[in-house]
Structures are given as structure tokens and as C-alpha cells.
Amino acid sequence: MAEVHLVIGVAVLALNLAAGVWGGVAWLTNRASVAFWYILRAAQASVVVQVVLGAILLALGREASDPIHYMYGSAPLLVNLFAEGMRVGAAQRELPEGIAFESLGATQQRAIALRIVRREMGVMTIGALLIVAFAYRAAQVSGKLF
Image (cartoon, rainbow, N blue to C red; front, side, top):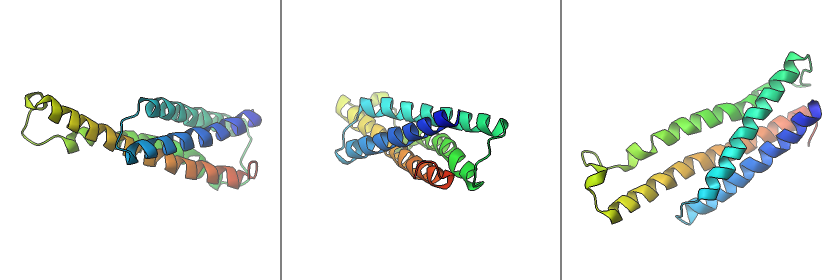
């Protein structure tokens, strides 16, 4: 089980790094990216699996050599939750107050939609890169990977 936890840990690092880089490039080039969202969701799923595996190992009596591993190991799940919460508010920040979106012209609607998606991608990209940092530290303090 510990080996699976290690393999999923590598997947957490790789998938979140991929999502962070992909999202960063898309954000910098001012483009929406459908692929980013698929990579991000796979990265988020790997985080959930990793935290569940860690909890199972702990329940089975397999404690980490350094207790701070638990903080670094569970922080990515919290980052995902907070980032998703922040992403929800992106649309409200981009929509003009007192103006119905449907009353805008098609060009204005597309421009606002791109700004919303770009803001959402920015939030989630920062979250993915933050997860990479936490996962890297979790691996370091575990003494198993680095």
C-alpha cells in the first residue's frame, strides 16, 4: 500500500505541474484551453486518491517518519477546495453591475466570457502550482522520494 501511495504521490506532482504549466501558458497567451480543465480534473482526482490512501495507511498504523508530512500531505486537498471556491466568484467579478449579460452584443459577451475563463484558469493554475509545492515538501519530509 505504501508503494501505491508513493506512485500516486508522483502522479500528484506530475499532473499538477502539467496543469500549472498548461494553465500558465494559456493564461499568458490570453487563450481558453479545454485541455487544461481535463488535466486539472485528473490532478484534483489524484490529490483525493492520495489523501485517502494516506488516511488508510495512517489507520493501519503506518505513521510518517515526520509528523509535518500530514500537513503537507493534506494541504493539497484544502488548496483544491479553496481554489474551487474562489473560481466560483470569477464570473461575478467580470460581469458589469446592473447589466444583463443577455442584453450585451455577441462580441461583448465573448470578451466577457474569455475574461471569466481566463480568471478561472488563473486561480486554478496558481492552486495547481501551490499543490506542487506542498506535494514536493510532503515527499521530501517522507524521505521516500527526494
